[in-house]
Amino acid sequence: AGNKLSHVVLSVVASLGVVLLPRCSNLIETGQMEAFSKVTNRSYRLVVSLSLPCIVGLIVLATPVICIFCGEEFLEAVPVLCWTAPIILFIGLSNVIGLQILYPLGKESIVIWSTVGGAVLNFLLNLLLIPLQGAVGAAISTFGAELIVLLIQIVVGRRSLPIRLFERDYLNYLQASVLMAFALLGLSLLISNSWSLIAASVMVGVFSYAGFLWIKRDVLFLEVFSYATKLIKK
Image (tube, rainbow, N blue to C red; front, side, top):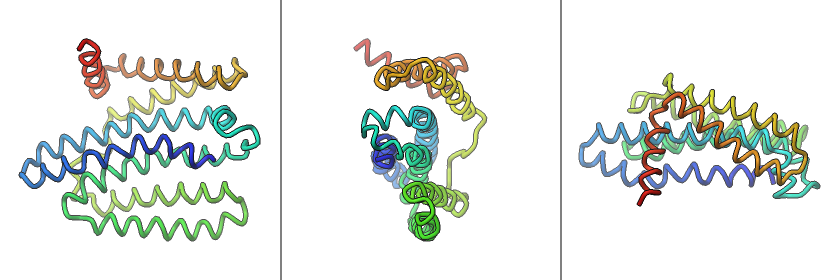
């Protein structure tokens, strides 16, 4: 149950890599490497900005989320959801690096070997952890495997990556997520009803996260906000 819930959010974030694959391939084939670099940098940044608040929301609100979507009898799935929530970021970024960059550049062998490495680690950790911790052990194994897939792609394929993996501006999303986490924790102490807590958390979470990025004048946020405003006016 916990794994399914995290994968619902993951499907939205991970779809970005699949959608942009033809675009990236076309840019490489036509020799537009500067445009290719801009597209991949923007999608990488977008994944970071979307994933972090989703992870925070799922972890902080794990109990009411499980109660609403699965039932109170599935409360043991709460730690599973908390362990699998970060794979939203891991898989989202590995999709950008693997599908949008390495595949179009003809470096699919790196993607294959990273997947093999993740599968081997997952199998070994499952053998070790499932007998001890059951479903939670399987969730920890998944966490470790997806992290290894991402790290292998970054380390082995670093010379082929036209993106900046770490930028100071990325701290905006981390700080905004921390602020959102405190806001949601405060709400969880004030509201006991699961439905009311989720509804209030969505509103407070969005406003706190977006408000912080607005104050920081985050470039990506301002671009998205401007685009959304134009669509509304139309």
